[in-house]
Length: 615
Image (cartoon, rainbow, N blue to C red):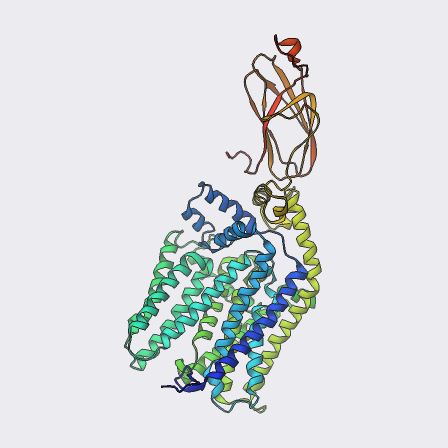
């Protein structure tokens, strides 16, 4: 039994407990340092606009809440991206914070810091720091490793998900993956007989795996399941060779559960067809191109895509960077297998497997768009885990073998690798920091487009959303007083003003004279009202002049007419006139009303639904 003040490392050797505290401090300081830098970035860029998929999801979420979309339909929207975490995060933000986009982007930094902390802490607790003829200034290397992990996780190469509210659930997805990897690693390396503790751990991981696949992982569940399966197979092969058969089936339970969940999810789709219509036969026929594009995806973890063009770095260098990472990872894995699979944590093996499989899936699903499509900023959060795993494994190989002398080529190669990664990080951070004022201008323009109701295709392109989805989302924001309309409350200031030719308002509506004007704001939704001519009044024609749209409606006594004013993209005045008016005192016996009455208008409202769709 360890004495007080001591703990056990992953190989069962005694380590001082104060080493654990030191590891906590190193990992926490690295995560907090880059977390603070991230908050400065968010403050400077001020990403407070709702855009991209969030606008579509906001409408779909409202449809589900109002019973027009089932839970299964909401879960299955997006084909390969089945899940509920994005909708859950958006729903929570709407209900608790009136859809505070800035808050979501700041909270993304908290989740990224947690991921960086967990990985840095686990690396700092590796037993190789205690073995071999490692550099005497071990503390500096440990701090550098923690800073490298935090710097990579927070790299602004992934700026897109740092400025999009859905970056919060997507990074939460990564956090769930990392937590599962950490727990599964402990299960696979557990020593002794398969007792109740291991059984409960296996059961908990099985439940967690199913939840992750069904509700969290979305399109990344395939790479996640593949990484877990790969490490599980390595561990099973190692255990069988070493005669460690006790509890082998128990340790397979989590994998079997998540694979069953993944299989059921796949069965809900089109079988051999991917989300972009790619058949498996077509994919296998393009394997060489897929391999090339996968290297582009992995290389994008080294430097931001926009930094490449701004710094004049040739695009052709990117796949070579990806290949260098693969070589480093392969050398690290080979070294680990020579020393023994359980000579260190299995976490870097999960990270490498997940990153490689993600790159392959990007090449398969997005490869038609060429290298830039698979290198998009939104995919950085996943491929960066590969680079973290590669650095981890190579560092472990050098440390465990004591090859740190300047005369050792491996040490020089590792130093060059480390410096290249650092240079890419530095260039990316520098470029993105200088670009933040321009990004802030872009977000201001996005909010102006939302406030104007997304008037045209140019505004929709700015919001990176189809025009219909953008207008639906903008209408819901205004209607419910969300995001940029939160301070104005429901309706978002989207109120029609009677500008002239109207009698005093009554409890249910207002009468117009022979001619009247409506001042209609830019709401992005169709204005709808009901015009009514009471029994006893003479029939008449209503003329509507709404910009270039001029039309007439025949009005009959006792028959209300629903009048719709379409979305035209800007504030305007609508002119209404009738072919005749009625003075009740002169035309209706017993009436003392001396007003000139044209039509009675009631139920004036904005309806934010697609044209032709029933509310």
